Length: 447
Image (tube, rainbow, N blue to C red; front, side, top):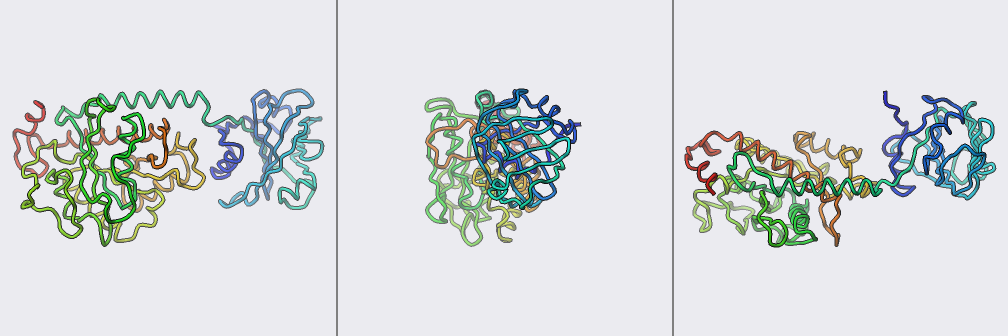
């Protein structure tokens, strides 16, 4: 059975951020490995920087050491004592007390400084200097009983080995997407429609995707948060591999934002899905496109239609959606189900969530705050967990970041797989409305 820590995600995260965005690896747990200095040092010596955490009934107190434990009697170096109370409460403050002094051990006693913090493991007791107690805001008593003691190895979360692995993954994803072949070559480019409220990040997502494949930050699509003048046009963006490379196997279609009083007209959506709406068509919030419009596409082919819909949501706003917005989204979902079209949720702005840092993007789906946002999308809007994707758009950066690139490319790859499912499920030689279209497949294969 795996040995697990008593620290909650929030407690661990706050400590990690205090000590420079570290990765914690549990080395020692007293209730498992034994309450003695020998047991602790046997497992924790020569492990580099470590953090020791002791748990009492009322609070947590511990020590960070930038130098390794070893079997010698004394080790000089910087030591940081820390404490926090209300360990069952999600809201707490970490208090720090730093000093430069020696760590040493006596018989079954760990001593941090001459008298600042002493741990008697075999007696399950800790003593804290009165001045330190006051500095850390702890209850005024000389000693306390210990229920548990844990020691973690502390490593830089973004060490070179991790970065190298991310770069390899990024290159593999780029290669996969550049050479992706859609199901039976029915179409050469998947059309992915971006829908979502104003300011959710639809245009930013397109700009981010283009930036990744262009090799530098680019902002072709205008970005804004108002309901007029931004994304009023329907845009169909084909992206190339690099500046002069070939077209990639997907097209992103950017639409007007969803709103309650203003925004994309709900009656436009079936026309968009079926491929009747041309590039640069200017939306009218109260009047949908009609077959009499001079740019209306009368007989769209399979390649002109939408093959996947990505709802783009600001991860921090989903819980605040009005009942009208939720109703609009569910209405669109029903329309998509009618056309047999699978849809995904694309969560943006995750790096704005409290406590989330760059290092968290490496394994973003394990972050507790992000998991709660995903749960909200699943509960409120009915998206399957497997169809809720997380990205971090480029909004203010000047240079590409391989960690962000991996999230963006992974989301795109999942959407292409969904397009494959859609194409495979199409009735043979039949369009999505059930009318016979005997030349569609042949026409597409011969392009």
